[in-house]
Image 1 (cartoon, rainbow, N blue to C red):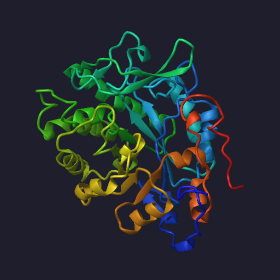
Image 2 (image 1 turned 180 degrees about the horizontal axis):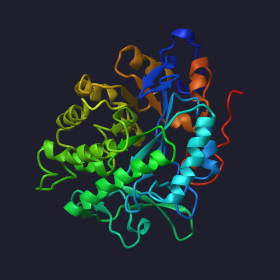
Image 3 (image 1 turned 90 degrees about the horizontal axis):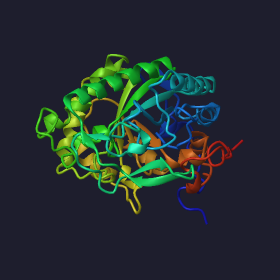
Image 4 (image 1 turned 180 degrees about the vertical axis):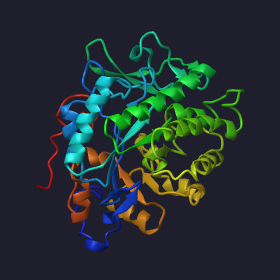
Length: 379
């Protein structure tokens, strides 16, 4: 018997809230279904360069109202996982151009997620350069994904990080600015700043990961400073209406334990308001953890009304739950993760009330076309 995630639903017709268009930054999104950023560890080697296979994968999913690319690292030291693409070399920019051209040819729209893993990394991923973080505190329980001696991907505890100096912070901001510029050159329609899931910008926000005593640590006004400066740097390259930000207020993976997340993320939302951003992407990323249950209602209790632009929600959504969020005006867009791995035509299936293909977790990370470009569509 099929579970709720895979069972067929009746089509909603013209009144389906998921299928209503939305204008974001001059882009007309034909529906409210977003492909969430999904790390798949399949960038071409050497150089972590997107390939024709990656272009095919994204083009297959161009029916989404918007695609947000997998996390794309802004520098070599930003890497935390093997075989993930970057956007800091000319070869990577050319590879991403293959992807964006293919998505646009298929009628889609795609933002590039700009990513720095910070302390969720391993020194073997950037030899000769230490893992960095707001403070020299390891990410308890965090696992990097590295290439083992046999050439296969293997999980490894994250390396001991070094605290970023002020010069290192300035260089990190410059890396985000350069990556934003490269994303424009690569043909993306916009960018999303990754400040969620326990990675670098989230580490600066979290009171337990950031114990600095300078202008970037201590009270929440200081802890949001790096995200503010990175956002300002990206806005030097992109119009604000083509820039989104992703946060995960209650995420406790990768060693995150903010003392008062309500205070922290209200401050984040209010700092980002008034800028005309494309959206604030609020992720209930706890559903990614073993036994994780949805906590979006808890998040919305303190996030509702704090941001003045479009809201995108993500975290274990299916069609009925996504429609309910849109109808309640909690969300303007809903992002789907694992369902988009196994259903290239997810938006079309949701519209038609069709059954969904179940994903194969064995092929989530690394490998070739199996479990990547070979999932069947309705047609």
